[in-house]
Image 1: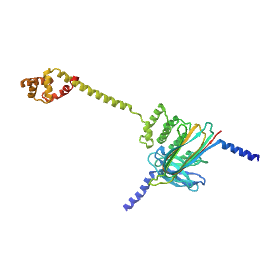
Image 2: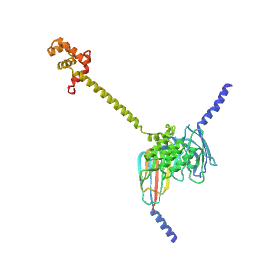
Image 3: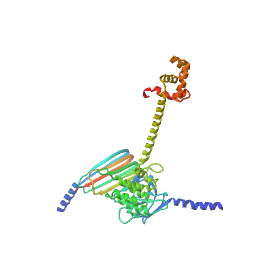
Image 4: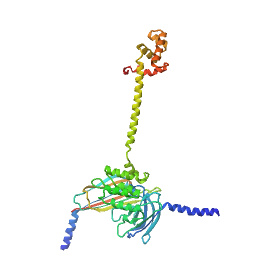
Length: 127
Length: 313
């Protein structure tokens, strides 16, 4: 019983220290530019992020920028085929990083006539 | 019989020619059951597409056998070009790009016609850039991409790679990683780029960015234009002064007669206008011609400007 209580308390403490931001965007012939900001507070031990994009038509560019607007990583997926027409594409980026720059980080998404889905998740582990 | 011989020769030459325009990739990989037994090669037309996934970029594909071996001949150009080899998980589209995670699914390599590129996945995950080998260019590319992953790498490191690299493509990629250079670093990059083929398509933006401004040409052109304008102005000024000097030698009566002649009047009309004899007008006209150094009425036109703007005289 004591062990169970200890585990519950430990789990609760871990939950309190982890902050999660997640969401998804459905694309239907969508064209837009959007930023999804998330705060990385000073002292954050690690940031786990994951972005998955699937498009059946169109193009999507995703990038991750730090508070200095410096691009950390990113990709573009498109569906055009050499002979014309479309073929689905998929892009994923994710990592578990120890942040050196604190402040507002952003996922920047640019969709061009895109049909598909974008999903993202950021988990910050605080001390 | 001759036709058969010709056909036979063509049959041998055509595939050989086609083979010369290719490069070969051979590899060995051990992927778990989540991965499809397929591989794809994409050609990257520029550095900005290195992380672009699209069916349009894929130029070759093939199957991986049970033992994890694969190979393919793929179309290559005479000059070095940048390629990406990638694998996909079961159920994923052919153009799938996974970056930054343990499931990273691609490596980059450089190849030109006739090259033999090797991929040997070393033990453990993930697929790593160092799994590529086959030429000095690829060793340099691997070193560069390792450096690019290091957050602490500064501009001098990239410039140093560009300086030492035997591959211009690697050099250009190294320079593309450098940003916010100081004047000294820019000069070093310019010196490195001066050794490169200026028509290398991967360097189009880079050559433009580091193009030495030909200010001296602009200054020279401006100087020549200024000298030409000053010369023209000086010539016109000198000419006008010479005309004025001659004009001032005329008497007031002669000036009046020139004015009337330039307004289109005949000698007779001038005589009438000034209430003098025609012979007097003719005498004045002869004197005017002699003083101004002209032979006829038409030559007097050059004095029209002086009469029209007497205040400038």
